[in-house]
Length: 239
Image: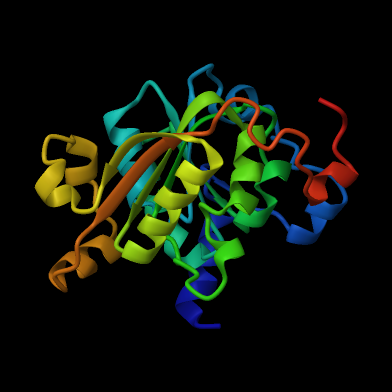
């Protein structure tokens, strides 16, 4: 591991806006903040917005700047990238922005039932060869339905036409509600300030390559995936 990465990991251990833990510990018990993010971390009662695969935290930080009346949490397994957003949030005193280094697979061990109000998925790996690993696949939607409040919105912003089309078709087949859908946001959604003006590093690169950026916003249907199980059910108390 490079010296730069080691220095960043060491610095993040001291950052008040970063939560880190050993993944193996989640097999023993849920995260202590689970169900208590507002009270214990943010010290307020504001809505929680989750960014999955936050990378350098451009959306977590950008949204926190624009919406101080909400709390934002960026999740990613790449700590060296996350360091950039976490440091920026500290420099700007964005106390409504937090970061967590972890795998998205374990998200239900990190948040309580209906604790999250909204989810952003920004430029994820489209997993073209592994559909079940796509962050908008039914296997992941089953995770989100537990932690997301009823009627909460999920946003997908991606350059991958394949992922966009897959998600749209799957949502229709599964009976979920599509709120907005565009194959080219920079031509079709110019009035959306958030989509236009918060850009990730990947997005800037893709735009430079002439790629179109797509977007879908949707809600999961009521009682979707009721009774769905995942590994956390082995130890989580009944809710």
